Length: 521
Ligand SMILES: O=[N+]([O-])c1ccc(OS(=O)(=O)O)cc1
Image (cartoon, rainbow, N blue to C red; front, side, top):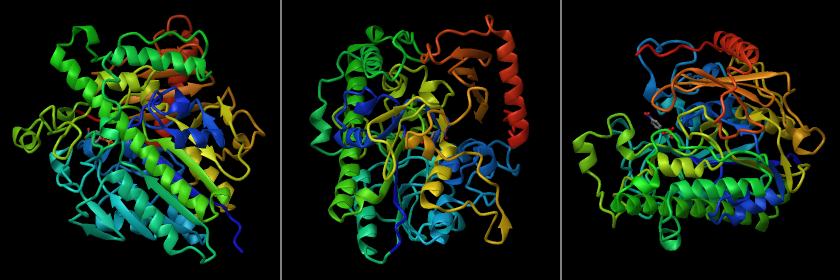
């Protein structure tokens, strides 16, 4: 019999760092909390500032500029088009995780968001998944109507098993339908003797915030004190859980966030309602994730399954009109923006920078930025050989997941795939960290860098240099000591100019090596 472990890779979309209970959130997430009890929780795990660059790294074990998502396809400008690494889809310089596992004899299933190419040959079905139900673009309604978040992606594209889907089942709801599809796919091939790789890529809790009952009503009234109070409570909870330093300061006011006290009453009511629905959506995602885990338990496969849960980036500071073209009056008019309809079909609400800052809790900034609130994300891993109830403070990065999973499966990354050379992963296996053997993955003297849309970061041990462009930052380099300042409020540039210069030089070398092409606007 094939004893290799199954793999269940679960991705949340735009989930804030502190939303899950085991990260200090007040939202009920019992199944993810149980995953943490049965596995290893990371406090210093990182991704990119947005969706498709992170997913490209997840699928390739490589840098986003190598794998084709140097920037998001939606943000490509003329001087980037045609440049290597700026294809806007998962390119052929890399072999994708499902392609490698499929070739190694795994059954491969995907349900949920892809966002790594939507032409026929770029569909997940043609990148190594045997069985798929996938939403192909950045975001859309969670119901059957496929209403887009961007005019260019409206109606949103879906595909199943290599064919586009123009009609979804009338009772479609994203988190439930993706969990059902994955369960059915696993059940259909049970007993064929092959292990499976299941990729459950939830589109929740990405905007528009949509959720059915009982979750729609459950959090009513819970956020009436506003986002500033929420951020403070999450910061306190993260401390009491030991996820951040005892002396870490509460981050101050965040860019674009109006102090709660200055909002009009009707604005507070809408903001709080958006967060209530968002919280319900997070709990619904946890519930449907839990159904998949219960199913694996029932069929006797859970003990031999590696479960990985993460988010693609931090909490999203956009309101719905902030997407390119989404303030077009004709586009806006197709939705019902009434307060009563918020969260129901036909609504298009994103919670904006205030609650995004709340969701990032003790961290500075949020999605779209290289602040910790943008790129530090939850990661919880359980499975055979992985320490239970362990918290690790080791720095790790999304490109480390592919090497970890291949290591667990006993599969080598190929030198060639489909007859052409592919780039070896830049990430490394975390297995020794997960089984409690090691307590670091990167040496404190090693440097790791990233870039997306002009946001730059470079890490060396606890130190991080960042450059955050407008409108979220001033575009100059800052130096932060994350061990005491996860809120990134204290710039050490003037105190430690030598270290800052060293980190900037390391970032420049990285940009040269991976082929960063700054947008000429
Ligand atoms: O700026 N955009 O075009 C954009 C930004 C974010 C976004 O959402 S994401 O989940 O795909 O990152 C989609 C489009």
